[in-house]
Image (cartoon, rainbow, N blue to C red; front, side, top):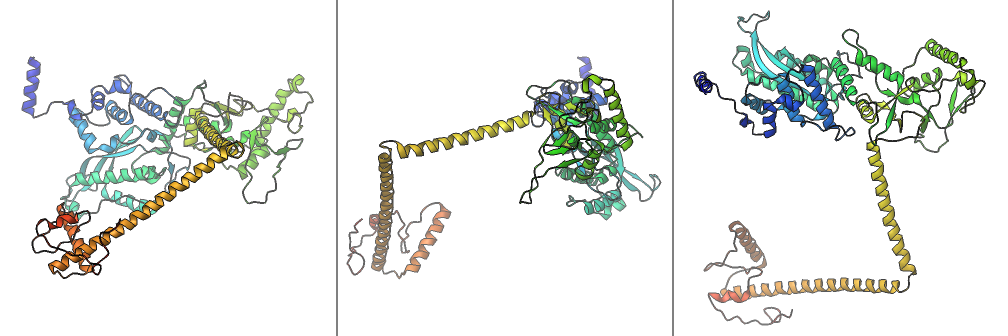
Length: 606
């Protein structure tokens, strides 16, 4: 009790406010603030990379609802997991709940986005003077926050007469945080270069001469510059691209982060066993070797990304004919009287492709196919022949089924030597990041096993089959009733009677509508005649145009006042529709005599 009173007295003396988690007004955010380690699923002594792994794992689990197969349930939604990561990693200065509330209000972009932002799927745009491999990818989770403004001279002298304004910025990129210092002139140069390279650039803060003499609001200007950078990257990310110039300006090594994230996410999604209802997807081994070198490269030994997946080496056209020596291959193309290209129907290879086939495929179809040197291919073939000679009983003098070539001249395609089998989740991730293909899905890890499809394609196939079934059933029912109406006894008489009743009802409705129209015209004519006679008795000058003008004026004032205008003493009055003519004599009574010369014969017959 004494310590509590001493703490309260010190707070009063120092002017510090008490920690109040209730100011967050969100029970989930309050729970994250009180114990971020438990909410993120890490220990109290967790390293920064462990917290980053936990945040990435939570995002991947969130993506299982849309992109991947079913995974474990996510611990937190994206916004709360991002807040927990910032608190665990201490990337923002939060001592009290009020500080977190201030960040949520003033720096809302730090906690915005979606789980897909952690995936490196953004392609680089072409920036002159910035070398960037087109296979490098970036993520959309880039935020820049203003920290403070430092004043210094050309050589860092703070006592300079007209010091420069250096804006200190904190850059958050894919769970990594660093600080950069930039001047307004550097931002202006960036805006000028980016405007020439991109189609659309958000508004850039205008130049103001007050900052030259230190009279401008540097804090507001720094926040505006950070908002500009955030808008540029967000607008590019919405189109699936990123600017290497912007990354270099902010000091972000996109290639290094791509290496680290690609390996970690692939490790999280990889599994040795197939999931229920899933299928195995084949990936060509040469591409996998380049991918392994890419994700294992560090520091100066950095390798280029592997590029698109090259599964073309695992397939062969269905109508392809091979020579006996397997040196050349020709495709039999059906002659078609159209400019539409013939669709490629392929099957899995039984034997590894020759050097000439790989070279032809790399030159004509896919430039990303790795073509080994001729001597390397010949050396590998010699090893295969040597292994075959050690086992003469299995293939002595026999010829294979496809093409009839001797077995010792061809290498049987094998798993772990020519291809690998990965699960659906890893294949989808590689397809999103690297592209390429085509997709080769099988029920088990053998490429020659029966084809299969993943859960996504299975759902699409089932929906299509259900739709076709419904359409077929409806067509069958229509045909059945059409056949029944032509063959069954008594059905034609019933249909004729039904059609006759339908025509009668239609005629009755048309006759009744015509009667109503004639009645309406007669009532309008009678009301007009009544107005003429009544105005003649009152000696009012009138004509048809004046009557329409007065009626329109009355309707306008009635709409404005919310009620129908009534007659005033000595003022003209036009009878409203729906107003009973008998009530007109409530104030004054007049004897009106109607004759045939004044109007139609009365009473009006309805």
